[in-house]
Image (cartoon, rainbow, N blue to C red; front, side, top):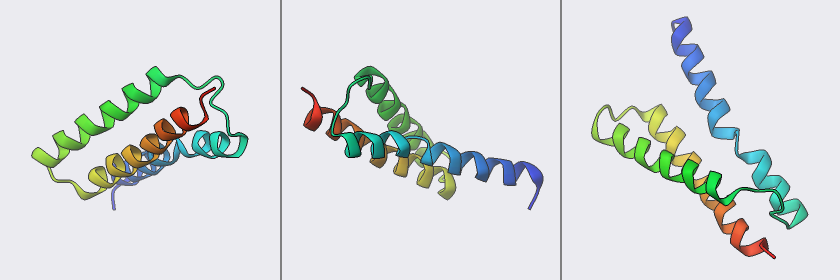
Length: 86
């Protein structure tokens, strides 16, 4: 495996897990105070569109997994946003 491929997989893992701490914090505290709904929607739509792009062009499995998992995690954050909004 080449160095740029390792870097790409490492970046994918980091991008996929990046929303998880916010998800955990929201679930633990049961509050969305300070969480931007605009950021969540923008991230969600960006992941959906990039997933669609990858699906229609390269069908690259790691990228599809990346965007699929990101859509799931951000979608749960959006659900929590409405569930815990005061």
